[in-house]
Length: 73
Image (cartoon, rainbow, N blue to C red; front, side, top):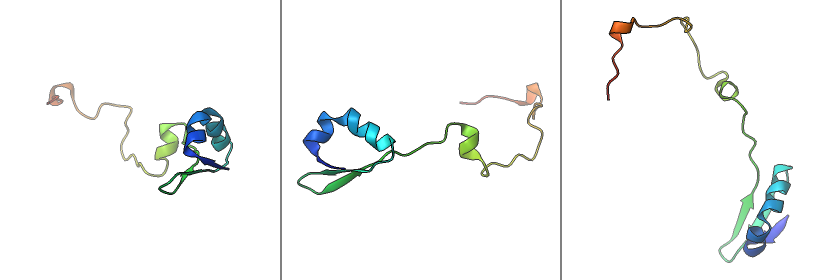
């Protein structure tokens, strides 16, 4: 879809819905052309971190005794 800046601002909700459906919107102004498209984000932190975080210990138990942990600011 091709539009100008004025119509882009005026019809933003409709254009956003079209982008969410997978359509790419090109916005033209005097300086050039801009591309507006939706980016699908992952729904959970686990999905984003999959394959990037490795656990080597059992994290269900405390890792330090209570008297060893000191918060510092």
